[in-house]
Image 1: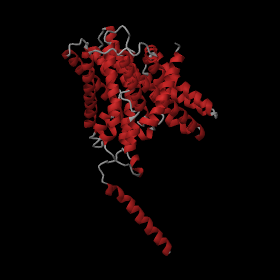
Image 2: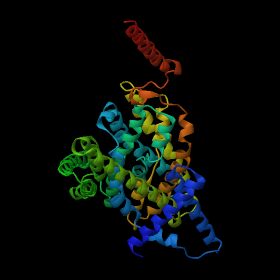
Image 3: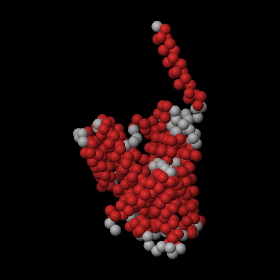
Image 4: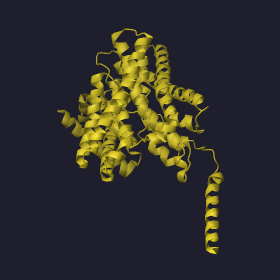
Length: 450
């Protein structure tokens, strides 16, 4: 079966599942299609165990589909760019320090907490899992994915500050998580240790190198886009911008994910100056469609991945423990930075719980786990733990974040205030509008008397 045939099968299945979700289940699209795919996969497994079927096309497709390479090489750049172009520097600037600390410090804290706790849990269950591989797993599950939770948060009403915290952190911690994963994987495979200078050099080169490459490449291509008036050529240049920058980043040994996020931010802030209004509409429509299709396909793949997972009793117990450990690591990685930063920045009373429970893990975590070499003896258990955390976060956390956050409506320009005090009462919010109406009426009466 050719790669094109496999993509065609997955795309067809995704479209059918999307229709079923839209007409019957009516969940958020990405959550709904994943749930359908997971239920269908479990039915296939049960049918195989009972002897009803012996071979199925789905297992063959997912077995041959190079998920890790497909996502990291083909889909990750497009997904990150599609999210990044919707963020404006003006919106992020008041929360830039918060986003950076949550993305960098949060990933580091989560990686070590999850890694060490999983190591001790594995020992308690009699599973041999070296510490360096546990830390590699910690890096795999530390990045968050806001695909579903952003729409839910905006529907219940959150301040722009919290919205930027969730969006910005999830974009940047994908890049930081990929850097941490590459670092620990190198240590695990080489069996070598690195000094403080070597570690610092590695992170500076990958992180800041990605920022510089993304800024330079994004600026150059945006200037090229400004030289043409044909919207089709502009879209073609944006495709070259994404995939070209990704390949250049890998060639130079810097973080492709960070480079693409910076490229998206550069494009978002330059598009008004270099593109016509019609061109911008076409561009954002194109990348919006691309992002939705890729996201939906991605979650279908996550749902059917269970068909090829190795499962045993003790490994299942460790996977369940990993879910609890992952949540605890996420909570600590949010609580500590927020506790320090709230001396200088405003955080709503709901921030910690929303950032913790809304920190969904997604396709990037699965892709990193699948990218582990086949000959690694711990690949199966790491993949199973990762899968358990991803499925739990999407189906359980994604479907309950709205109730956990609490209902709240957003009024007027309230959403545009990054330091909005969400504890303000409804009467206090209504007072300014009452005063404005009174002054406006008084002004009209004065004018009429004159």
